[in-house]
Length: 96
Image 1 (cartoon, helix red, strand yellow):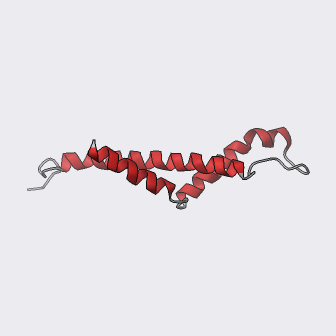
Image 2 (cartoon, rainbow, N blue to C red):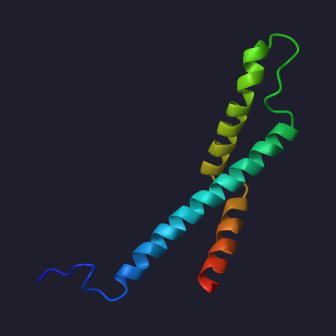
Image 3 (tube, rainbow, N blue to C red):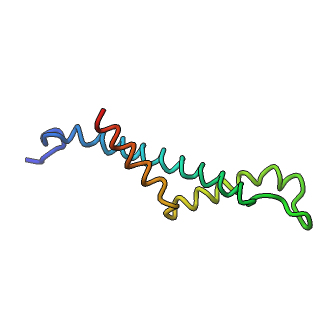
C-alpha cells in the first residue's frame, strides 16, 4: 500500500503553512529591496554624471537599474532586514 499525503495526519495543514511562509518570505524580500532601493538613491547611485552621461535616457531608466541592483543584493543575502521582517511577521501570523 502506498502512503499518500491524505493518509498522513496534518499533511493538509503543513502544505498551506509552507505556501504561506513562501509568500511571506517573498513579501519580506520585496520590502528589503524597496528599502535598499531608497538607500541606494539617497547615496547617489543612479544619478547621471555631468560628463559622458547618458542624457535623458539615463535619467529615465536609472531607477530601474537601482531597483534591479537592490533586488540582486537581497538575493545575495541582503542586509538581514528581510530575515528580521519574515521572523516578526511569521510570529504574528501564528499567534492570530
